[in-house]
Image (cartoon, rainbow, N blue to C red; front, side, top):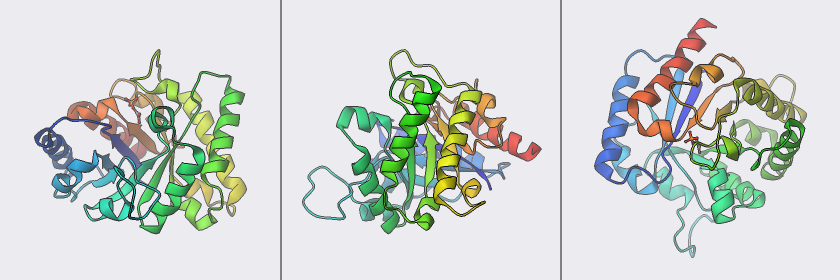
Length: 258
Ligand code: PGA
């Protein structure tokens, strides 16, 4: 299974020209040596039409959708609207939406159902909001996992990408610091154990579980060295094509070695 590196551009960049420039720099490099990594660019909605021309070597994703399929939802965007611009992925349950916009686990659950219905692969973020002991963090992740995956069939659980991304590790959050590779590995294995409880034997390990939180060219090795970490969700570093590219190539290099 290829590693997956997902760029979360958040509310950046500020112009469509910059967005085009950034994506074309990455797409151009993707056409060369990278055999073991797939890249997904999760861009602001308004850039998806312009970026839909750059999908030969990478995929596009949105950063949110409404759980409602169409109709009276002022300011929201539907799954079918993002699908028409070649977005095949959507980030759901990001902690910035949970903290700033009141998104709850049951809303995330409803959005997962809608995404899957429209064949958008959900990229579901899980992770504690505050610094806590490792056992407390595992308990929080367990609770989130059980709520966001409520009533999902095993086949649906398999079609989700899971990201362990604690709020305290996000580069822009206050007093942030990245998780150690060891910590990320332990919590990712914990997510695998939750999946194993719901799926037939052997299936869970074929699902991608990623780490997110201040991954960049300087620390990527810390995560890429573990075969169990299937890739990364990258925020700030994804806005600099050189930095992002080094994250991609490090995961590529490590997976070639294994
Ligand atoms: P960061 O963001 O890489 O800037 O920490 C990651 C994210 O919020 O998904």
